[in-house]
Amino acid sequence: MTANDNLLHLDLPLPPGASVGPTGPGSPHIWVLMPASGSAGPATRSAWPTSDRSTHEFIFRCRDGTRSVVFQGRGSTFRERIGFRYIEYLLQHPNQTIAAIDLRADAQNAHRQLYAGSAGKGISTESLVAIRLRCRELLAERDEAQACGDHQRQEFLQSEIERLADEIRRVTGRNGKPRTVDDGERSRIAVTNAIGRAFWSLRQSLPDCEAYLKQTITTGGALAYRPTQELPWEW
Image (cartoon, rainbow, N blue to C red):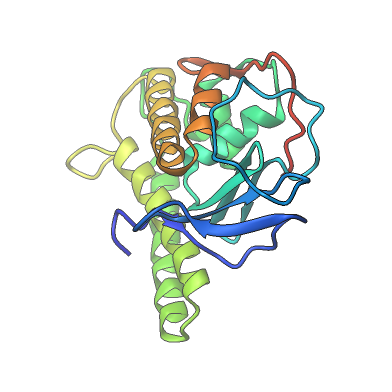
């Protein structure tokens, strides 16, 4: 899989009245909810949505390493990345402020201490060894899935390997040992960059969704999702 294979097209169940079709040559497949008349007019940018919308119009769901996103009835699928996990957490906790270091831990089901260390070591040697061992296990599982032709599991494992590899690079220096860095600043940079990469992915096929999230999500040392009206997101 190349770096450009970020968008995936899977056989996902479609909501009633939805149709599938490419947006253009070489574009990822997306689906659009058809209006009651049975014909879908050209996609246009509208005002930000309100909460009294029909079901299936707002989805932000991950299954088996694939992120399904639907905004105003228009959807696409992406390979899962950590930035999507951060966004999902914020969407599930509207109007709540959370520190970057806590968001990092909550979204990855980790303990806050993994990322905390004041101005000392950002991660313990024992934790670093454990992450590297887990990477080796995932590599073996990925190779096994590839040999069995289980491409969906192979891609899921590859995304987990990349996530852990990114974490190792963030917390180690050139000598491979834990680096000394302020935990709050490191988390701020890591979370902001991860969300930025997720925004870039959304921009390729769901620009309205990306624009909405950029307007309603604040990033930095503390993050929050502050919509003017809460949307009926499905997970």
